[in-house]
Length: 305
Image 1 (cartoon, rainbow, N blue to C red):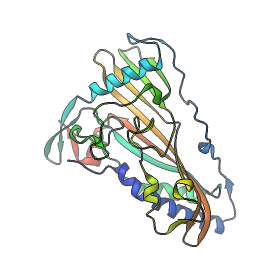
Image 2: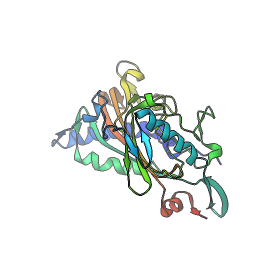
Image 3: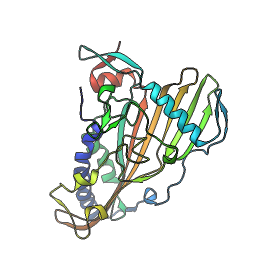
Image 4: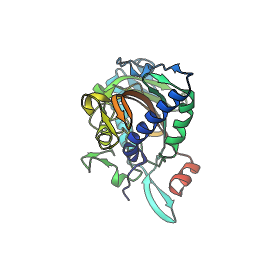
């Protein structure tokens, strides 16, 4: 059955978190004079590789002469892995889902208002977000569903049962031979502003947030003292990467970890009595495959059969 994912639902309340945090941080900063300056490294406009550089060679019996070769092999293994299904017991019913299912986790941190941070509010933010975001089970990123029959985006416009990643989407990639018949492929996609699912380098690799700004625009208590929403609300994706472990005999992805990094900047924000404020925060969204039995049970009341 199709569902609205936890990440999709996060779009609808991320703006609320921003409003709460801006107001609460302003209160704390005004009440408590001890303030530290925040390190806003994530706001740097430069898109640089954070993983090891590609080195041509033969890994696990597979020859890689270029990043194009890496992406081609990644896509081939991704597509094959998504043809594999397994049966699960979900709330007493037998369901057929992807064989490789993963978990999801989202963290918000480094909240700055007017370029300043406060330890008190930083301790509150995880609790606010934790009460709003509940992870679920889904297929290999950028999947938004556990069921291959519903693994689409944009009302069925994009089919996520196959990879659409291109070599041009990739900033850096590398391969490691694990010496046991498996290899690790690590890929860092190029950065993107306000990434959209399946429409850019980040959206073809990660389960991106999508059009957050349209949601922010609907928050009645939030306005901008000057400029438009597009000028004042910048969502910058960069620096994240994903690593997949592949059995080279079968071409199956047997494990994976994806970490998407997002930096949000808000300028000239008016929130209730607060006028012309700037704020920023960092989002770390991660997926681990395979999800363990405890996660399957707690998130979806699922067990493997």
